[in-house]
Length: 138
Image (cartoon, rainbow, N blue to C red; front, side):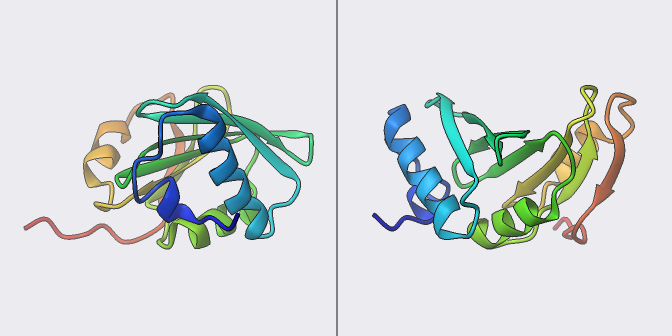
């Protein structure tokens, strides 16, 4: 079964953990991330998944279909970020470290300006940086 982000990010997937796991894992494996397996921990919005890459580094996904996607990792890993960029078909908005020292990358279909303002200046989020230019507000 060939899947892509259209079956779980750009449309709301059936809220059954197995179906979400199957679609997301196949998408990851098809896009060269063979050493990862994600388990769905919440099938309702926001959808959440946990797993590990190469049985070592913890990885978490959280997303609102068609709106935003958050990748949490034990450390910055450009390979995973690059593959997720290809899967989601657009550049991430920003990255930072959370209070647990996890590396976080966020994608926002609307550019993420509201979220940027929400977390900017909060001391628990370290190293906040934009990864694409802010979109002008109309």
